[in-house]
View 1 (cartoon, rainbow, N blue to C red):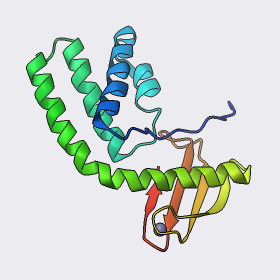
View 2: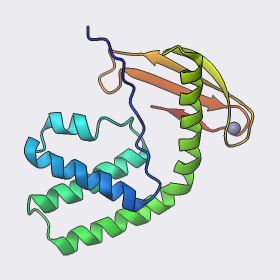
View 3: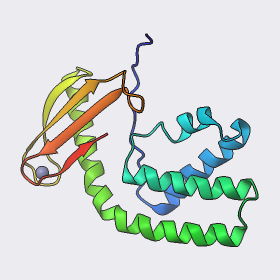
Length: 159
Ligand SMILES: [Zn+2]
């Protein structure tokens, strides 16, 4: 079995503009691949699944449909506007979750161990939070499973 050293990095975009940019690049790259499974793996499934990535995939689809002449520019603009509103609603939640994920990842980096349990200070409420990272190669969607939770404020994440 191939040794997996790279971990899925969460999609980090703080504005819809930034999200659109990444989505546009992904859709543009897909032209070469014919939007096949390999392309999806490289440009969408490369991020741990989340509400943001779900939204991201929909933005990629708008560009993809536009490139394939499946939709007109006006319709694409209207769809992007709708997705932007969804993004703004998600954004406040995402902001604190991303800080939480980042803190958990840093705790793993500092521990020097790729897998196992770590403790870290919750960036939202400053209480002790715990994270666990497991190697799960049999899982079809992610070969690394991460769970983190804070008892103080109830923030929790899993990929
Ligand atoms: Zn907390």
